Length: 226
Length: 163
Image (cartoon, rainbow over all chains, first blue to last red; front, side, top):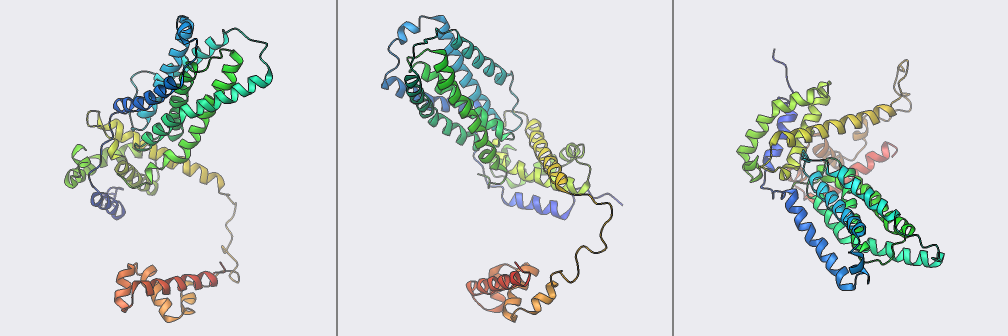
């Protein structure tokens, strides 16, 4: 007697019948690169808002410093790479051609190292340190909010198999982009200020985004197909 | 798959038939128990269905398919490990699972205690698996009236079970 495989059972046949009955046309997900391009439009809008509200007064001078250019370039590219990986995470089996996540993390480290070579201003009063810092953190969150939401919603349209990682990458993409914008907005170059009030919101944002990923991005398997 | 994304039922049926054997071979290497294998196979088909809009025809199909299958299998194994760790193994099984004096009454006995109209509603919906509309039509009442009877039956049974 032939062995019954899971393909032949009545239950499996019923499942297949149900899937075929539900075989309505679906709107195909655009390729990750195209989706990244659309996301960059959102980032450009936020960037334009920063430009309109006024960037740091010494930006022109600072842009002549190659270390500053390298630092903000590293932050911007790291944010872009994280966002690109987040879009790829939404497509099952999408293999990245090169270790973009590792390169992104490396660039973050480069930016952090360059922060540490900034001159220390020991005369900064604690009250000023906290008030300016809280304002910077709040501004980082405000700048990240729109790109972050856009990224999470875009990833959820796909089928992220590793929702925590996808969430963390979305947070990394949005908050590193916000950190990049903050460096052309905030006039303070103090290492402690940068590490506490610019870097910590990024780390917290990535953590929070990973939790959102765990809770919200994993639901694609239980929702009805589009 | 491209045609399946456009809603072509026949193409989708052919695809599900084509992927069956390689998918099963892939899953068999990860799941040994035949009952679990059947569950995981069905879960994989459902996941494939829900993710079908993410497939890009310009890219190879197999990595997409097996990434989903791998994810479902790993999810299943993770679920099993978590549940097995909560189970307590005992040396000897007790003679009786529960003390007969404490056991809840059998379903037949509980149904006997229900008013006939409520019992009828319960049996049609839960034991015969009829839809509300069909059951209401059979006994000539409105669907709302049938739902009320069924609801009262559930409430009474819950009370009999001590819930």
